[in-house]
Image 1 (cartoon, rainbow, N blue to C red):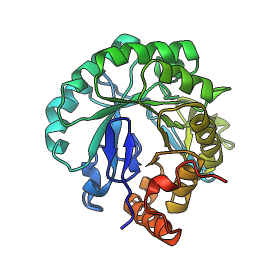
Image 2: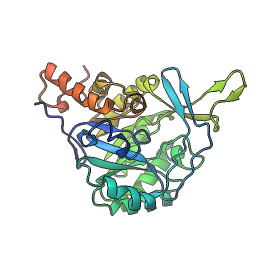
Image 3: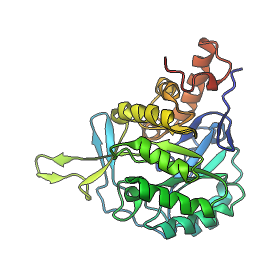
Image 4: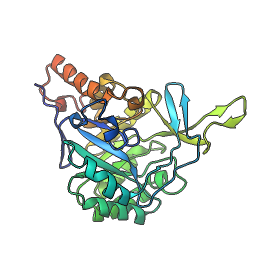
Length: 302
């Protein structure tokens, strides 16, 4: 059997396939379709220190080869997660990772401190890149100074594996990656959604209530692939790649570009079993290419 194990800092994944935050709920929503313990990790929906209602409807729109969303980090807050959700998912035999967001550095720290106390949560994904909230979110991820500052402060409060999720809505994503690496990030994940919009020509109005939203799906893959390739050459920490991964071939392209692990997002809405299909497809590819480990193809672009 091919060895699919990879490491993100001190975090070992049984295979390099994870779900992307906001597309997989808390994992339990998918138990009717797949054995979620087969995944390398589950990144649960964005969690903030206080409950958020999210943005008004409509907040999703289909686009050619993709979708726009402006959900706005709707969640019931970290205390609700700890008291109501955590007990039901803590014993799933995979890595449960919490995506953490905030409107201020203090909010990021407060949420990270609470999650740090949860024994069965080995990592957080620090979301400094969400384009759908009016305060915080992407604002922290668009400059080296602010990105470094929030990571530096969270790193003091959070003692386990720290993955930082980067926005593609910048001029030089490698500079942002280097900035967060310098302040203690164990890994970076990229890309979050691209900022886009949709218009209804008949009503002559924006389709989304927020006018703009985050673009995801197959249409963003070439951009994501390029950015993962650039960042993996710039930093020494592992890169987690995501953006338009729909099948095993897409995932393998990200490994070749330098990603140590990948996340599957929008594809879950189309096929709730896609994560398992990708794991199996990676296995078949590695056997066909006579590789003993998935690590043999990470960064192996010729």
